[in-house]
Length: 369
Image 1 (tube, one colour):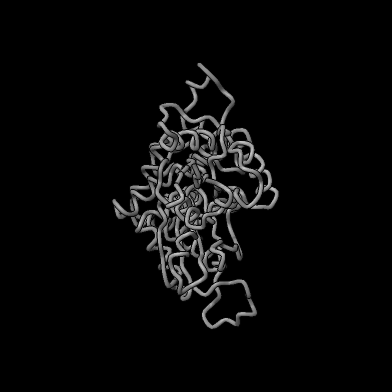
Image 2: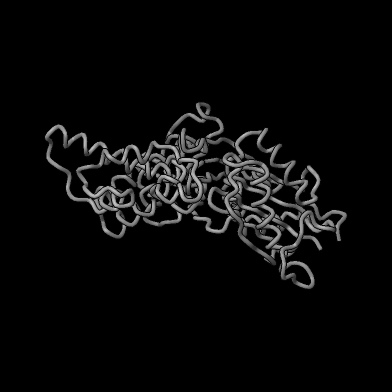
């Protein structure tokens, strides 16, 4: 058996896909969150173990009812490709690689590829022989943008990156940014009201946000500040029953969990306030993408590792940019900056794309059955 494993490790879930040497997908499964920057090595490894062990159930003969134990008893993986949210430095790559090598029984080296999750998104570049550059943009719970060059070997060479700095420092265009910008715009409106300026029109989003945090009157928007800033209490049992549920959620999640409300208000209710929030957030992600691109007419020597949008591919991945109307706002912001990509694709199953792409390269098959 020679399996090709690809695992997409993100802030909300872990997706594992296993393909055979012909590129046929044999197994797939999900696990819990596996952002390497936000959790312990043990918790990260456990999330990967759950996903891969369950994906293997349909790959072994006969198929297994129970998860297949790891590391496997035989050398069944020809190679594995991990795209991991939060792996943004050589040290992180080395630490994650060591943990995954022990878990899967794959020695450190070319058979085990560990990189940021944006690398998986750029896999469709192989399908367009007329170009050799791609920009991968993640827009989910967080965000990150990375540019790549397609090498003759079939592998992807990272050129440059920006973002992926986490909810405190960035994540422009991601879920936390959407929630934070919603609260900022609500506070701006409260400030305008205190100046006696003309009140803003009613907003379905404002009402939904305040209702979620137990605040009854829109005029009392400043009361939401303690909700944003108070750390979650260390409570258990009966003590936690007296605390509002939203205060038991980690602070960054209190804001990122507002994103569905914003999208519903913007694209279903046609709420101008919500749409303005998403325009700001989409513009932030567009700024990140544009940073890795050469300006129209710009001297290539100014940014020698930048890509030219009209001769490159833009690959989106993540729950937020999976919404077509939101992608349209990003395209609009990019076009205003003069960046129109030759090809654009939303990759909704990057683990599957990665597994099939890995099988096509046949890495690790030499010397195996």
